[in-house]
Length: 137
Image 1 (cartoon, helix red, strand yellow):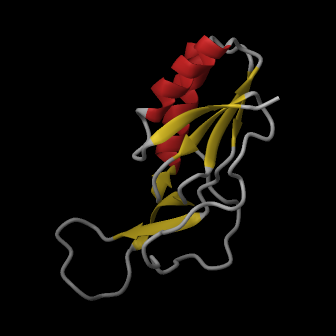
Image 2 (cartoon, helix red, strand yellow):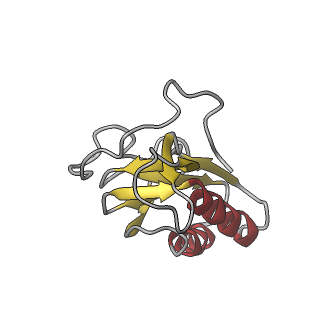
């Protein structure tokens, strides 16, 4: 799964609600087809990996897939039945903060119908609403 090699701070605060539209990474840059998010939220490294596997299996390892997001925010979790207090929990997993309009995945080298179905399967693994996008020539 994806995770940073090194982080400046091991534990970070959760931060506020994710709002607004993505200004960077909001158009198809590398491939011919893309999967764009319509919601704001968090996507875990496990969800990204599950989506990647679903796409790769459907296109039978043909074509090329680009992952345009990276989980760089550490999320902590305290153990089950742990009493309140005693500090912040240890790092459990990493997430990517996603704004609406952000391009999540891109694909090239496969027919449009195949790409659309692969992206549909991938979108079921994510916790956000998404949309299939074709690159304008």
